[in-house]
Length: 255
Image 1 (tube, one colour):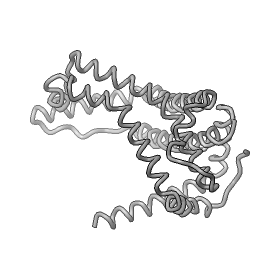
Image 2 (cartoon, helix red, strand yellow; image 1 turned 180 degrees about the vertical axis):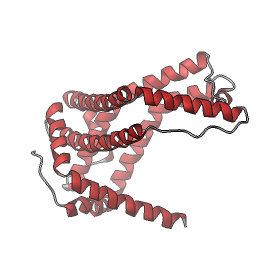
Image 3 (cartoon, helix red, strand yellow; image 1 turned 90 degrees about the horizontal axis):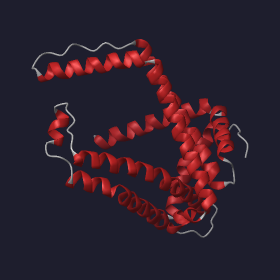
């Protein structure tokens, strides 16, 4: 597959196609969603159990007061949380591959079932490629955040000091001083958010490439980047329209 420019209309067509796909395969997709939810609950269940049973007394009060409590229970919670995130990094990518393949088979009219989302766990090379792509994606996010933090370390430190001073003044019953922001920091923050949105699209396209074709991790990332850059303006228009429609729908529902 090579990166190509697509029409703006095709970016909206997939919304109707998605609803039609759901209507034709409702039970299969609901079953796959329920299975995914169950796996997610099982994955994060140890963290919730530890949070309920082993968290030190006064944890919530300590957080509200600005002090982080110490104790073996808190250390156990953080350890379990870190292990859960690592486990998710290893276990979630094959599940996403399974979802991509399930949707492709349903779209093509092939026989497919909810349990098909688990098939990539049986394919060792595919599992490793999906894991490699996920690790590369995380590394790219961390690189962006690291560059942002390195470039604006002084401004971020000053902002954190202001926040601490405001919190101390509030606890003392005094009026907190108004915060002052660096214009360069604010501009860089929005640039960072925009770059991360673009990367999200790149990773979505690249992961679909990994899922549906025998493409290497680097090549999939290149194709995802090429496809997003060639359609960047249309993607921005689509996001604006989609956000406007979603916001309007939320307002109507709220009213």
